[in-house]
Image (cartoon, rainbow, N blue to C red; front, side, top):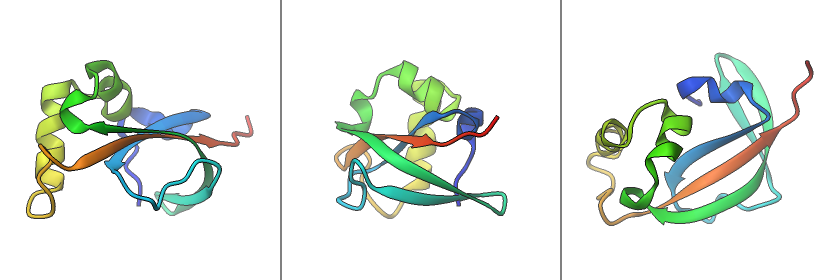
Length: 100
């Protein structure tokens, strides 16, 4: 289930910040679910990065929050799973077909 932080799921291209994984591959299609609706998206770009190195403007557009607040959210989200200070993350750009 996706969270529509900053209403990003209503745009043709949007980002998600995830723990780096081979699960995500450029050119592959993925199905996201948001409020009971399934959305098919294509992965168009992946940037491996440490969470602390993500620029603040990326957090603005991805989460709708500043960097400090976003980092606190990620620490809470991944608490007892990974150390967000050392775990590899990725900024993933998805593209969806919008019919306006």
